[in-house]
Structures are given as structure tokens and as C-alpha cells.
Length: 429
Ligand code: EPZ
Image 1 (cartoon, helix red, strand yellow):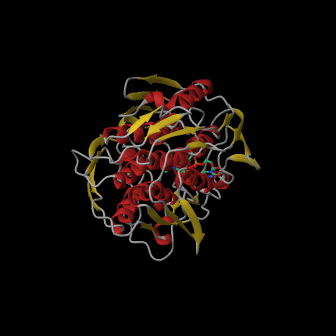
Image 2: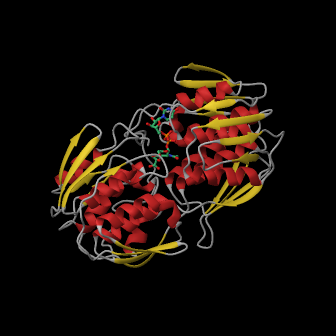
Image 3: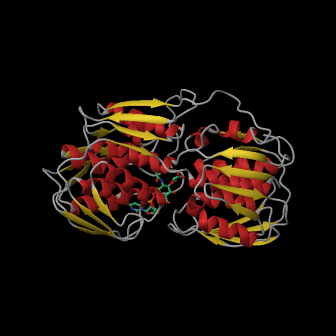
């Protein structure tokens, strides 16, 4: 990448990876076809396709210009399993646990293990399933769950967990009787999953709030659903426009899913013009430092923390960044320091002193959002930056170099997209 060009024009946002993944898992709950539109062309979707196909599901995935669609048919499931080989590359594979127990009465899912940004336990998923009557054992790194038929119950999440809420929401749909879940995640992706499940015949109220009520039903049927736009991809492009002093229309997004970020950028001095399904960003002013604390939705999203850190290096003053969700999500900091940033990490806090000019360097991506922050820094760095291990970015950003080049970035990929990886695993996120 070569920095210095302002981003100008319109860039389109793809469907949300973190809404598409649970939606694909939801297809396990019915033997009828489920059609999902606006699916992003990213590696994690391909991994999920492989995971479901290994169970016996038929999964078509098409990325024609006109549509990004997948049709899933889980009529003949032969093996309710998620192998370690797949789960270690994508911990969101644990989203099949609840649907498999609910539909098949049993599941054998590898424990995800840790990943680059933290320990990533699934104890809350397991406790919730036990509350719904599942018997759970753990052996050889796998969770073995079974239940003749799940029965409704009351679940209090000790911590707010996005995929934990989604896993149990799907399981409760086919449980006998009513389930009440408290302290649920309120992310838009949870509400989008509930919208799909209700189209499939589920009876869910309160998704998107902290308390969700589900009346179990005997069966679910097929449905067609359009995935919501990716708010994190949109936020990443908005920050790219600010950093490069561009004038960018980020189209096909939901500004109301980005309130915390947009408010923060206003504090920093950015000129934003949100429309119904787009945000126009004019990045031509001085940036003022401002602190962030990552929190569950609707607070400032942890998935935007790394991108904000890149922005903070160009703001005048000190920005204190507190990461409350994951215990090890500052790996991008040292790479940014190598490009000239002034960042001190102390436990869950990082202090960024700006404004420091960034100079191009050879840097290494470590996880999905850390790689995004390196791309952002490279857009303003003086000289040519080489980012290694960009397979991390391909997990969650569709054709990122094409999209950014389309609005003026100087960027090209060395090597091919989705290279057939050797045994070496990809760090999970
Ligand atoms: C989801 O991960 C997202 N992934 C993550 O996005 C996102 O960073 C995260 O939510 C937080 O918003 C998907 O939706 C596929 P959590 P998830 O369970 O569900 C602890 C990206 O970049 N916890 O909400 O795995 C956990 O350790 C990815 O797209 C338990 O202790 O996150 C963490 O500290 C990265 N026990 C906190 O809760 C559990 O059983 C929040 O985790 C579950 C979670």
C-alpha cells in the first residue's frame, strides 16, 4: 500500500459477517431450504459452508454481481459435529451447538480454545443449554451435548455474550414450553437472527433488548431473509475517509447501528452527513483527541477499537482507549508504533499521543480488526507499507483492496485471494 491519497466517491458496504454466520447456523433448525441474501464474500462464510456440508447439509453459495446468496438445506443431517480442524479456524463455529441439540438431540462440537484476542470460553453457552435440559460432557477437547427434547427455562447470562445469546435463542425455538433469557446481547445481529427465526415460524419477542422471551414450537419451516449491512465494515471505511482527508459516501449501511461511533467522531471534529442508508464523510478538519471505552452494544464496539486507535494517532492530544470486552486486543498497537505512532499499553488501557506522522513499514496482521487498523494506517503513512498475513483481513472484509482502490487508495494484493492454506492454522477470532 502507498499512503497519501484522499478517498473520494462512493464505497458500498457488504452484508454483516456476524449476522450471516448465525443465520447460516439457523438453517440447521429445519429440514426445509433457507435462502439468505446479501451474504458477504468472506472467508468465514466459506468456513461455515464447509462446516455445515460436513454435517450433510447442502449449501449453495453464489456471488454473482446481482446477488450474494446462499441456499441451505439441512434435511439429511448425518453427523451433528463441528471438528477441531474447522472450529480452531473460526470460533463462531460454536453457533451450531444450540441448533444441533435442538434439532438432532445431540451435538459434538470442538471447544474453540483460545485465539489471538483472548481466551474465548463458551461456558455461558454450556450453562444455558443445561438450563434447557441438555446433558453436557467434555472430553478430548470436545463438548458432547444431548437432550431427548430441550425444555423451556429461565436463563440469566452472567456476562453479556453475543454468540451465547444467539446460540441459546436458536436452541430455545424448538424447546418445549417458554424460555426467558435475561442480560442478553442487544447487538443488531441478534435482532436480525430473531427476524429470520420468526420468518421460519419461531415465536420470539424482545430480541435486541436485554430480555428475550421465546415460545418453543414443534417444527420450523424454510424462509428467505436479507442479511443486514456490516456496521463494522461501514465504520472502518468511515475512519478511512477521515484519515485520508477524503470525501466519501459509505453506501448501503445502517447509520442507526453506528450511533456510538458517529457520536465519537463528531466529538473528534469529523463532519458527517448520515442519510437513510448511507453516511457521507468529509475528512478535512483537524482531529481532536477523545477517549473511548469499549462496551457491549449500544456502547462503542470492541470491533472498532483497533480502527479508532489508528485514527487517534492523527488526533492532537492524548486519547485513552479502554478495552473492556477482550483481554488481549491491543496487538495492533506495537505495529502502529513501528510506523511511528506514540502508544503506551498498560493492561486494558492504551494511551495514544498524537498527532504523529506515520511512516511506511513492513507490518504483520494478527487478527481481523488489527489488520484493518494497519490498512487504515497505511492509507496515510508516508511511503509503501507491506502488510503480511492479510488472510486475517479476508475473514471479515469482502474484496477490500478492490473496494478501497475504487475510491482512490493505492493498494494491491501480492499473492492470490483465499490461497489454499497449508496445515498452518489461521488464528481464530
Ligand atoms: C462476537 O463474538 C463477535 N463475533 C465478535 O466479533 C465480537 O468482537 C464480540 O461478539 C463482542 O462484540 C461474532 O458475532 C461471530 P462474546 P463472541 O461472547 O460472541 C466472554 C469480529 O471481529 N464470554 O460477546 O465470541 C468473552 O470471553 C469478531 O468480527 C465468556 O466469558 O463474543 C468476552 O470477554 C471478533 N463466556 C465477552 O464474554 C462465554 O461463554 C464477550 O464475548 C462467552 C463469552
